[in-house]
Structures are given as structure tokens and as C-alpha cells.
Length: 479
Image 1 (cartoon, rainbow, N blue to C red):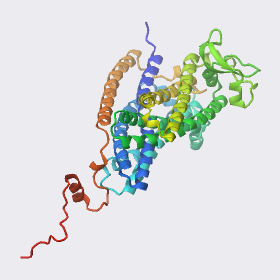
Image 2 (tube, rainbow, N blue to C red):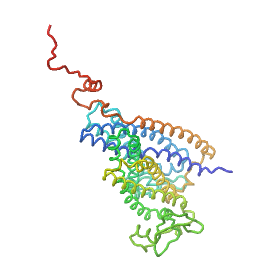
Image 3 (cartoon, rainbow, N blue to C red):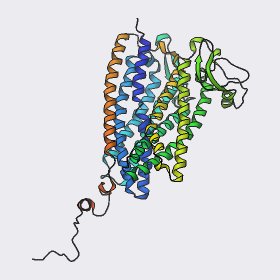
Image 4 (cartoon, helix red, strand yellow):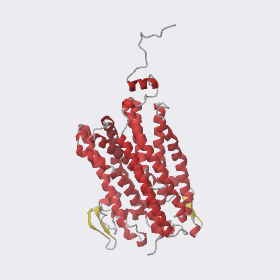
């Protein structure tokens, strides 16, 4: 059987980017939680919040290192496996990736040193500022990556130079590239997904501690902060998803049709399928349950408005409908699950009975898997739905691969990458598990706060139970 270099190159890129994307959303989500925790410490001087920030900073740093290591590999593939694509979009992608390096990575990595090592060396106000800068750096990194990817979905601000295989896109309006028709909606959706993941990750660890009756004050305060974040952003994601779907209907109608299994344009409005199995041959959704006209209403505000369906596109411009439909619907289902679970937990927390509900807490221990899946499924749906284009309407995926790389070489690299990434994943899980089992420092074990009376000696005295301060009547004898 002849190996398909396009398919293998796509599999390799999917492997590397999906593995890499385990880490950035958690970094972004934890960064926001760290800002809240440090702000609470700065406001209340409750050292439990400091213990929280110290613990989650360690988790953040491990995750950040993994994200950097796996992100480098992903970028090399543009030149090795996708040389035609790199030549075509180099001017566009280059500007976005350069901005990501200058305005995001250096900001995040520069202040990360202060965040991790500066607890006893800078003031609490400076440490809070460093935390905010690290969080902003992680968010800015997402901004430029999403801008670059969104340009592939909805190109803008460019012109084509050259012809045939020598053709390439050049920037004519940088801000049109940045604010292309889909970038801001997609950016909001990606960031909200990261915030949800950060909240669920913190709640998972906190629920585990509560069930084990360990670090209870730390766990309950962490869970409460994370629950507020997860609840708010789970609800906002519903609004963001709706806005993005309306943008997709306007800019990438074939993708929306694949999302919803909309094969045939109907005058009476398009149904919204809750689930089913798309059938390309019959052009139906088998065993599907749909709400008549609801898709038309969500897009146009009219139950009878027609929605452009797949039958209005050439067959060779259809996305892989089944894969696009299922990944999209799984993501949406998980989104509603997050809303239901966080609202239930918020109600129980307000009633004061959440931390006694062991069944609910066990759900939260494992519920962190959901946001990980939702983030991955969202990207899969977006990338499946863009096919057969790698740059929508301009360059097909099967025309974008490197011409001189044999399929066998790609296959060997997939095997090697898989082995290395499996080892990295095991190390990541081991280090996280070790730090979580160790748990946070107890407040009594924390170093003295910056500027606290007595400084280092007073802290040592508190640890030993002794005092280095002589009683008033003890005076050194004069000789």
C-alpha cells in the first residue's frame, strides 16, 4: 500500500499540536486564578491566600516549561512538512509569530522569574504586578496564535504576489490581518475555554484534598475562587459560542453546514440537530433528533430563514462532515455539562452544603477531563470544518505539503515523536502528581512576609518556639 504524504503530514501535525495544546490552556487558566489569589492576599493579608498562590505557581511553572518545549517542535514542521504552505503564508504568519515572541513570550518568561523566585525578595505589590504580567503574557501569546490561525480561516489585509507555485500572500494592512472577520470571536472563545479549564483543574485538586480531609482551609478557599471563575466563564462561553457560530455562518458557510449536518438548503428553515450520524450518500442525518427551524432562528432570528447548505458547494469543497459534526456536537454537549455542574455546585456552595456532598466532590475530581476534551474538540471541529482548504479559499491542504519529503520519512518521525511525547507526558503527570500529593505549605511553615516585624530571626523563633528577644529586665552586665 502506497503511503499518503499529505495524510501522514496532517497526522503528524495533529499529533504535535494536540499534545502541545494540553499545556497552554491550563497555563492561561491558572494565570488568571493566580492573579485572583494574589489580589486577595494583597487585600486581606490572609496568608492562606499566599499559600494558595505559592502552590499554584509551582504547578504553573511546570506546565509553562512543558508548553515551551512542545511548542518549538510544532513550528519546525512549517518548514519541514509544509514548505509550500510556509512560502505562501510566510509574510502573514511571520509577522504574527514575531509579535507573539516579542510582546507575549518575553513578557511572560521575563516576569516568571519574579513570580517563581521573588516571594521573599520583592514586595507583595511587586509580586502581584509580576503575576499580572505573567498572566497577560500567556493571554497575549494566545492572541497572536489565534490571529494567525484565524487568518487561515478568514483571510484579510493581504494581496497575492506571483503566480502558480511561486505565489505568496503579502501583508498590505497589518491591522486588517489582526482584526480579520473571525479573529476576535475566536480569541474570546479560546480564552474562555482556557479559563474554564483552569477553574476545573483547581477544583479537581481541591475536591481531592477535601475528600481526603487534607489542607481543608486551603482547598475550600481555592475551590470557591475556581468555582466562581468556572461558573462565570461557562455561562459566557454559551454567548461566545453563539456569536462565533453566526460569524461562521457568514464567513465559512460550508463549515457551519458541516457542523449541523445541513445537507440540503430548505426554504422552511434549517433544523438544529441535537445528535445523529451524518450520511453523505443519502444527504441526511441518520437517527438524528433535530429542532425544526432552530438553526435558522439562532443565525438569523427567523425560524423560516434559509441557511446555505452543503448542496450549494461543489462536492470536492465539502469538509469531512461526519468528523466535523461529531466533534462540534461533543464540544457543545460538554459546554452544557459545565454550565449545569457549576450552577449546581454554586447553589450548594451558597447553601453551605457543598463540601459535605462527597458524590458531587468526586464528580469534580474527574470532571477536569471534560474541559481538556472540549478544548481539543473545539480545535478539531474548527480545523476539520476548514477542509479541504489550509488557507480558506486560497490554498488547498493537498497542495501545501513539502514536495521533497518522502512519506516514509514522515512516518518514521511520527513514530519517534510519539515515543518522545509519551515519555514527556509520563514525566509531566509524575511531577504534577508528586507536587499535588505533597500539597501546599501550611501557613505556619511559610517564610515571614516581606517587611514583617522581626524578619528572618523572628521567623526562626516562631519555628522553634523560642524567642530571640531578651526580657526587659535582662540587661547585659557592664564590665
